[in-house]
Image 1: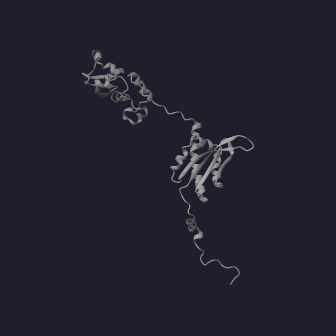
Image 2: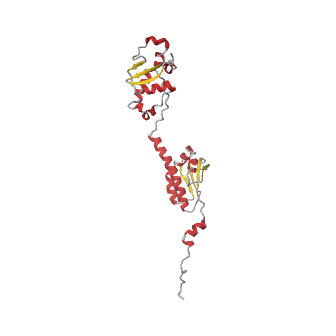
Image 3: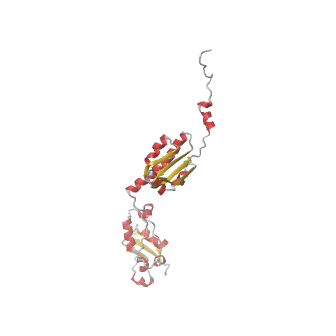
Length: 253
């Protein structure tokens, strides 16, 4: 009797299943309804068909619970033809009616405008680091270090002191320390870039002049994988191409 096939007509949409599929969850509406002890209270139509004046599209999720033991995650709704025109509120109403446990959905944390801005600041900082290394390469350097000091804008330093690199990094003179302190994993992220062979953060201290206060210092060092071969550079430049005819001597003869 438990393997009796039944048809559930929900709002005109028919779902076929077994009695045992429903009764395995006795604490639900259908699980209770189709228990053997309640058989005399049932009034099927067409022999084994039972009509429910409920939302037939949302009932797809109810049947998924009986068949699989879980309700599909709400956000999957848009990917199913059964869920067209079914809102989360409507679905929750059907779950309540059929006494189906609601899935525990972990809501994404609300993102504030401040956090959005901070995320953009972090992205811009990482982009700046790559540009600074590129500026160093243009000046024949393969390594550059940027030092940021807590609570001190003036003690920001970059080595080598390339003017164009300083201009790029100066906007982060105050925020750079907090970025490195809160997101040390950015060094590993930067090493994934093909233009960077090594990247690391070093901790240190700096004593403030004319006071006994000691401030924390963080230095970010980035290294290019390109070994600048001076002889190759020389050959590619005008130094590698002698002037035709030589230089004219002064004084005539």
